[in-house]
Image 1: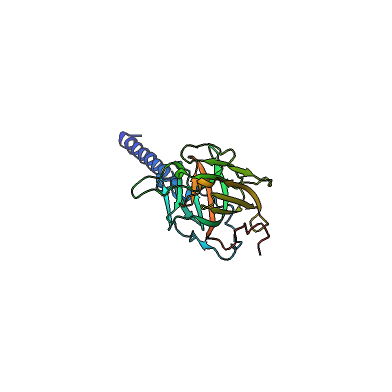
Image 2 (image 1 turned 90 degrees about the vertical axis):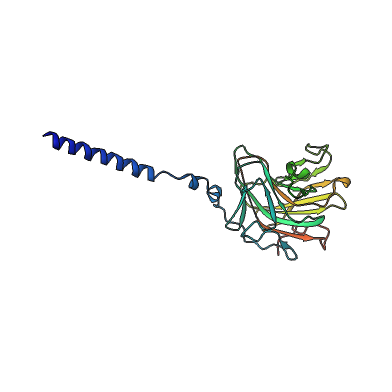
Length: 255
């Protein structure tokens, strides 16, 4: 082999190696793909199709977060008719409107968490003023859904609320399955009652009650992502303001 032929073969080998590296690099996922908002959502369990009871007004249109405020930004996303937390940070998603006496019904499942914690909802909290960041958990009362654990974030409390909540006998729920939750909240009386149906469409069972007369406050209803790494899902969220019936309505089988 003469020197010209050797030089040609070396150049050909170098071109082949460069081409292989380019192909290998092109098959690696891009940063945009691995951080896409939809990449974190486990949709293995489609949202329940069981209709909500009549007389409620939707708080979620199934397509966007219109009517809701999130802190921090981009910590929740909508996909396939589901509001899902993205696990990026501790934070809240709360309604633009404020409510005093109301019934709220929604479907919830906790997909996963690392570190793990139950999904949480908030009421009797504060709506932040314009350009003001919300207080931690809105200074609200918390109930963890569907299991019924509790916390009181009100000023001067920040504890599990011993003596404020009454836990009632109820089944053990699988938080990774969809549950239907009904809450009857009365700011005038400082009361809240929660019932859970699992599976969705079955008769609900009352799980936990809250009663502190001076805790009642008109404010937003909120979903809390308790810590980074949590992936919670909500759908079929609807409200009845000043309920016609002052009682839980899902305790009987859905008609």
